[in-house]
Figure 1 (cartoon, one colour):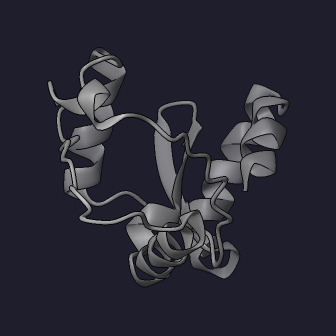
Figure 2 (cartoon, rainbow, N blue to C red):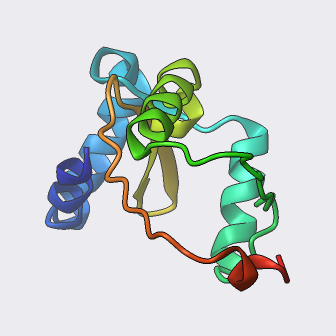
Length: 122
């Protein structure tokens, strides 16, 4: 999915306009859709102030015992499979913004063992 964004960036202005016209008529055919009103609002908020995580919700989960990274990866994979928004990529072409939903996303999971005392402030 990342490749389409890079390919669009390389188009000249005329080709970008032609591509936008095609998307407006036949975007569904290519799994590319316009943003909803709420998505547009969130996109513009992001563009105005990129470092502000308006809708990011942080939380912590305490486990009573050690859990394998395979179990965590399996749970995250199921969650991503069920929730298309977690597989959605935003495509920006000039002043137009679209979304494309991937059918599958691989999770590069990294973890690090740490001491509980390091996390007391969270």
